Length: 79
Image 1 (cartoon, rainbow, N blue to C red):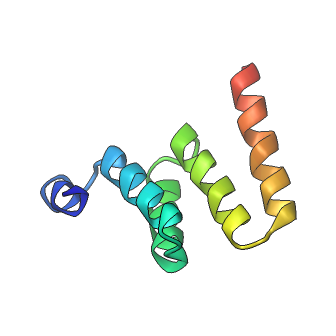
Image 2 (image 1 turned 90 degrees about the vertical axis):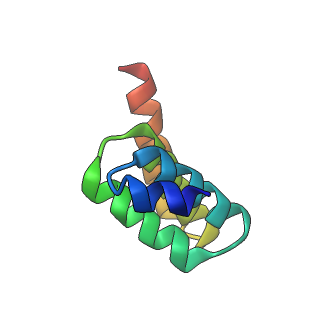
Image 3 (image 1 turned 45 degrees about the vertical axis):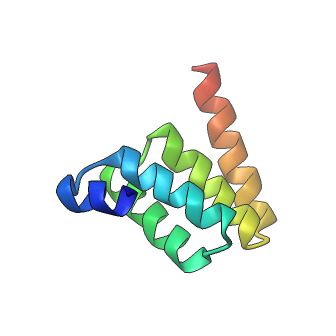
């Protein structure tokens, strides 16, 4: 269903967020990477993009990336 939303509304961040969550839960790393890149290109500071960057880093075993994105989210929540 979210693919259809994205087809009808190509700028939909909400559809990308939901699709990225599904990709993360189902272990589809390549799709998660693509969606996170799309979110970052469209809205680099969007909180959902930051959370998905963290998910992506965790899925890839990138502890430095996990720390970086965790720090970004904490800084954003303090602002």
